[in-house]
Length: 222
Length: 360
Ligand SMILES: Nc1ncnc2c1ncn2[C@@H]1O[C@H](COP(=O)(O)OP(=O)(O)O)[C@@H](O)[C@H]1O
Ligand SMILES: [Mg+2]
Image (cartoon, rainbow over all chains, first blue to last red; front, top):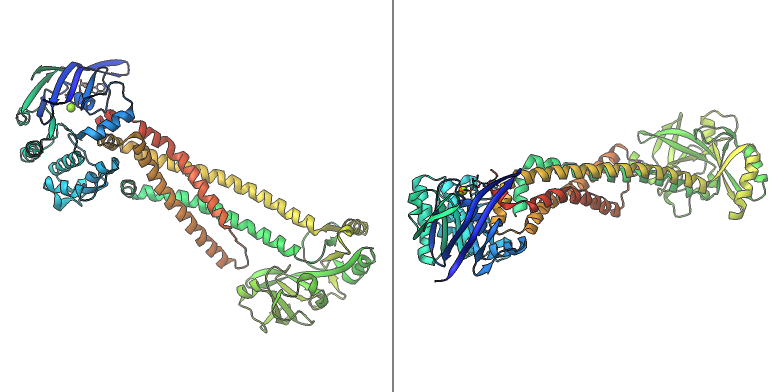
């Protein structure tokens, strides 16, 4: 089994105005390539913190994140950006899209930022999430569920090793939520996409192959 | 693509910023253009084939009217060793092409001192009587052609010649005709041009003239005086440049800073989907760059429009703006914009992506 993401003794303490808030207290989790894992836990338990650390958007207070076999401890911002570009696709809970450009341009942007040719890739990816007809629409002209599907298309158009999704259905009604989750499950099933899905919802978590349960910055099961 | 879309999403703010840059650019260029008026006057005056201007003691006050008895002064000037020619000019204000023009009354035989042989583009030099010779600019502005008549000072003048612009006056008439019109009983002069035997004679001649209790200064001095004035004007323009550049800097700073702050979360998203700090920095600068480019273009267009309007209202004014000044204006606007955009761009690039993402 090939481990693509692994955290080792991950500790995160936020400091603001002299107040220290512990968010993660020594967290170890590993995700194998091709796995669909959900991280489940109540609000404030440190799920987003974990996602930001794995996505290399933030650095841990202690411990390290291993990404595709590379230890990311002590890397510069530039090196973390490079690894993020290579391996990570991110989807957040809401307001994922840049509001001034079309759905297709949002997807294409992920390629442009990597100086990769866009060609038909953005359009095909939008077709894959069922939005080929709405590709010229701007985010405000799409429903929230459609916006999340565009965000998934944008995260996956670069063929990342891991899709990191932070409560991607948190703002959706159950029908749109199912559609988004079906989509994620389909990419996992058909393309072997590795997925780390964060949620506080049991039913959403249940869509994954494996559920990791968190509480107060620690893993309690899984 | 993205920077343009971002800019277009805020039309009013973008328009204001573009106009601020544009007005600064245009203000600078129009002022530069207006200084060319002084240069044109200086050039015209020094195109006269003479070395010294002579005026009544205490002059040069108003260059108008017959303060000097022409024949008597001429005789005295000619008696000075080293004087090759003394050329009387009687000035009077004539309304031409809707403006007051300083008409030069000259002796017809003195015309060669005012213009070389190829200056006359139409007609002939003055011969005498109610004749008028004008320059091409006045001809254009007043719609005057050879043979046209102009009723002035109770006389009907006929345009007998048109000289290419660059001659000292825009209107020439025979000095005797003008004297008569002004009801002088003898020939009078406002001032004299004196041509000396050579450059070495200029100083001694000037001293001798001063001893006649007349004011004398060389055309070089006159030119230098105008150049000094030009220097003063350039200092004013320099101050305007500083103010315009500072306004440009402030407007860009405010505009771009607001853009960055209101898009805090989007910058976090950008980092999340793979943008480097440098790319965020570049995005902000690109947005400022688009405002700048539009501002420069607006400035150039405003300048050309202002120039056209001014020249329409004041056809005899000179507004020449050398191409290099356009480049200079663009460079100044660029400097102001770069400085203004730098802080917001650095701030955007340095933003912690996680804090940006938690910001809603
Ligand atoms: N920038 C921050 N400064 C201080 N405390 C923070 C900051 N970000 C998150 N926290 C705190 O860290 C804890 C974990 O937050 P988070 O990872 O967002 O949890 P979850 O995503 O599970 O709701 C919470 O107590 C939260 O208030
Ligand atoms: Mg969260």
